Image 1 (tube, rainbow, N blue to C red):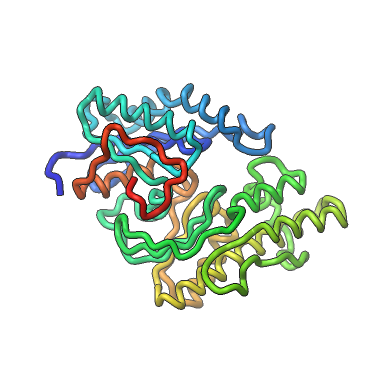
Image 2: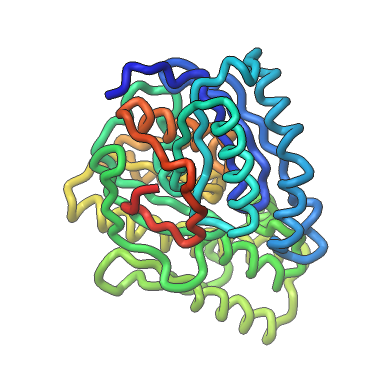
Length: 342
């Protein structure tokens, strides 16, 4: 344990298409968290264009950091440490944030902590708490990642299962594109599903009868394509019904494996986190399952569901408080896995 002060801590997140900076205070409290989204820049392409995303980070990072410092009423001279996403993510995007952070810590002589982006998601439900309530089972669902992780402590993560193909967020977005909905598709599917019948269209629940805790959404995507190819793109109420059925299929697949893991491991504390954790049906369905199973469920505040520097700063704060530091020459790791030191 280090006695040197580590707050105020500046956190930077640039792993994909959000440029984000946050300031963390004593106790891991988020004093500010600024997120600038690139959705409009990538919308016409139907997905994230890595080169464009990297350029936007370069253009925006100075202003985003300045805004985070202003909102927290903190100056650059006040900073005691920096946390930054090292991976996983898009290599060009990660380089922007890491290079900016390295320049700052070298210039100011303060410690650096490279953070695993997925660890940030795992801990996002507990931002501001002195210690997360370990152990817990985490369902991490986003556009790039879907996994079940048994979390035993800071840095002690056992990956039980992950997606064998598309992540849940990709299943939403790719299916939405087939339906003619704008990017990002998950939001539009969720909105339309509010007035739809979730049992109107029979869609598969990938891997539901397979042993283990892995996920698969490629079969669902194929089923969506076949339905549209045979019946055409639904409109009006039929579109709402299809979206509700699609959403229910994805949520069912996620929660079937979560319940299986919780029962077999004897876990009663469950976390749902990541961008898809903002989905209204997933949030309500996991609450319903918790009542039946006797779980204690934790979900991040909505602002900490999607990629943000607040969760990255909290993870960095927990590790820095334990005396951990990253080498100033640390490099990005686009394929960084959980359980690998960042």
